Image (cartoon, rainbow, N blue to C red):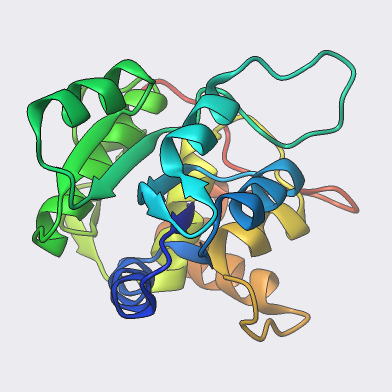
Length: 230
């Protein structure tokens, strides 16, 4: 899962990024409206954490651009439905109401607890995926994003952070073939070193722990988890 942090305070941004990466998210950071918008047009993200007081303008402007319909025939990666969580020091009720009315999925006032932000992020991602349950079920697998636990046929399975992130990416797009580059972008942030066979290694480990039937390979195209009834 890829998350874009739009925050000009380096300390806050780096702290959030570390917590998200520890939770298995791939993270990018941008400190201005312009830089964040350029990245959103070029790359897809699963969620955006948005500060409002940015050096070159108000974060609300970025939210408005994102919520606007993507022009037909363009190659923009922007998705108007991408979950956006505002995080700001503006705590007045009118500010909160305005942010939510502009299309934010949630509004957190600084300072906030990182654990609460992560919980609210999981809720936003769950809503975006059309799920009401906090756990993800796939055949005999039960995956809990909050505790990052996996059970297969009632037995706990231990996964690394990257293995868990890969599993979540595949299950949330079950039935859809995902390219190697798409999986790399879901697991690794900008500037992180990626070995040429990293995805193959993670897939091998998941198959060893969860069974060969979980992940199918389309040679030359990518990987997918078969779509099954929960």
